[in-house]
Length: 449
Image (tube, rainbow, N blue to C red; front, side, top):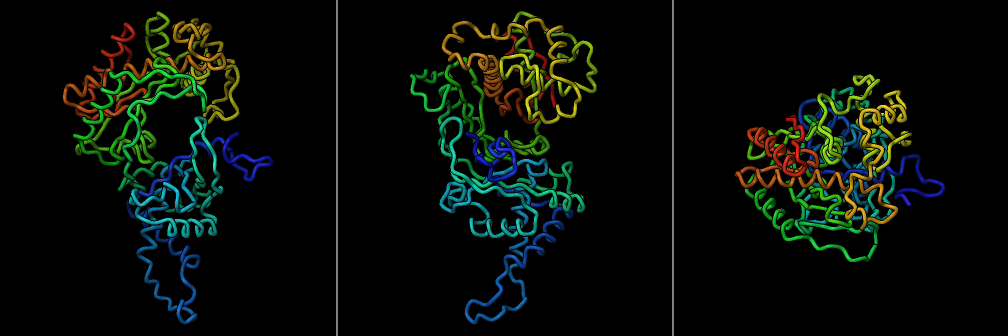
């Protein structure tokens, strides 16, 4: 059962969107005159909802001195900055309601406590500036207990008010800076192998010493550098059921670089130097072509015959994401399809054009080696296509990162991309090309963002 789902529902929101909420950051602050002016207005509006109405000793109305104004403005700014970070794009964020839950543990050294946060959050709700869904106790798909995390996001009224102050989606990264990332507990195993199904007790392979050794080298290299604009990276390599499936590296913590919007990642620095992203172009499609024995095509791999690519390229890209993820040719858009909804093209049209250009798509499961497919449960075999492509991509990136580290540099994995100091971008591009040629027999196209 999806979290936040009842029959009938207790709210009007999409349960899937609620379950995918980002962890709320309390390490952000308003930056610039526009954001600060917005915060000050909202802090003033909140005052009647949080100020003491009577002196506790005399029970007489207290004098209107507003001694707590600076603190109220500061804490309101922290809350709004955290909400706006993802909420400016309509995304939900999650935070525990109970003071004893891990979010509020003193080891996280948050800039405001549970009581101060929720007092102001309830004031924002009273002002119709905050959308809220009560926290629930639920388990994720792996059986991990998630606790009672409420879901919060800015209301449309708050977004309109922010816009009137010049605080928009385009200016969000500069309006709401990540100043003090929450520390990440370094407790995660460097390599995790999850079962195919939550609660499954079948024997799993052990993490090979080579993977553990690589993750140790990467962690030691990270410790030698200083990061600003994100939490100091704590990384974990994750497989699913087999060492040939999944294998991506994930950054832990709610203020990690991997969960940031792209415009926030551009503000990250390593040892004071700006960063660049170096990524594989059309990663899964390119790897699938190489795996199927086809050369990379000239020009845009997503260009399909008979389609207006200027108009439909994003829809085509999304079609390939869905197809590889499910291991089946997408014939109909799923109900929630984001920007594809505005593309005005049917999935079946893209399917026909994709098959015409790439005949191998009709035999997708043939991409996965027989010995790998043999250990996959029947119900998961189609999904193994995407998981196997993901693992090949991860192997390429692991080799590239290892080469960069051995040369004295540092690279942070972004699945199909690496984040590196700008001065290392060209060397990172060559490292990915060399790693892909060694693994696939041909170099993939790599771009620098």
